[in-house]
Image (cartoon, rainbow, N blue to C red; front, side, top):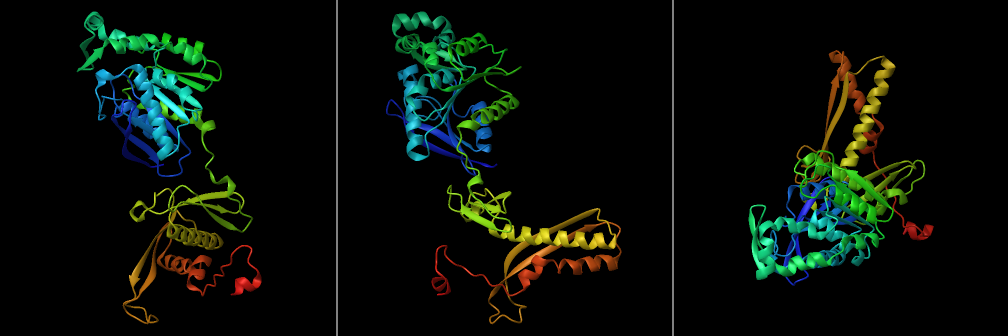
Amino acid sequence: MAVRTESVNFTGALGDTLAARIDRPTGPTRGYALFAHCFTCSKDLAAARHIATGLAERGIAVLRFDFTGLGHSEGEFANTTFASNVDDLVAAADFMRREYRAPTILVGHSLGGAAVLAAAARIEEVRGVATIGAPSDPTHVIHNFKGSLDAIERDGAADVELGGRRFQIRRSFVEDLRDHRLTDMVTALRKDLLIFHAPLDEIVGINNATEIFVAAKHPKSFVSLDKADHLLTRKADSAYVAAVLAGWAERFLDDSRPDGVRAEEGEVVVADAGDGKFPQWIAAGPHHRLRADEPVSVGGTDSGPGPYDFLLAGLGACTNMTLKMYADRKGWTFDRLETRLRHAKVHAEDCADCESREAKIDRIDRVLVIEGDFDADQRAKLREIADRCPVHRTLHSKISIVTTLEGDTDDEAAS
């Protein structure tokens, strides 16, 4: 399924404008997830992008944003704390609830994993929480400050180099980290929990995953990210996380499949999908489900073939079936049989029946691709037989389409 990404923004916990992206499927959206990035990272980290895209391809829209003072978000990082990051997550969920739908899934990477564990209880709609390389104690990040911790404690603030960039870390940030007992929050979580962790993680050791898992109540699951690093720099690792996440989240998602659209044998039922301007669910008989839409160029989301695509598909399928039946009776064998079709409105310059040469008519170009041991006469016969397929004849015949409203009386329908 194709994915569309849109830049949005919302107001964070400290009143600053936070930059975000929402990755959404072009087809039906079955659920929403909120993603929290790692400490001093951003929403545009490769792993965050790949996971969000992977989930959107599977029908789960994902909002990822830059915490206050990071990436493209406004505000001063020095003014933030772990608690304000959690508040930013709650603000993001409020924004999603207003503009789209509240998240049912929280996903957090590294310290973002600790943040989603702390925020989950404050977002009522959340049913599942997933962490990736998360520390069991937020104070784990203090080791990044190395020799600057004494200066932070003594002077109230100090500049610390993290990932090649300098950040001002204040004493209030450190003290706030120490105030959070994450394992107590995990024990009280009462949400489904999925823990991803790499045994070779050199930034946040695997023992952190063990401590979170032991503290959590069931249902809980652990997935080992064999040979992955902390930042999931290999695309294959983040793609694997997205695939497992989507499968695990299946039980939390809306069942937006067209199971409610029913058709009897020989009947076709088309029902509005309810998730966009054009999308429709199609039931062809009791067993077959299809989806129709329009291209993005005309205002659709391209989540399914358009009405004329289905028309061409019907003609093409009928053409091939008719040719196969004829060839079978003759004992002929195709090495390859393919029908290619295009529809267009063309000027009726050569139409003898048209009242005006400026009028337009529907034109279908049909190209038969026939490979096999056929001579010229056999190929000519197959071309003739193609014009005899039932759908072709229907399109050339006078068609009566009778439209009624369900519940109308015969007199009302006739009028």
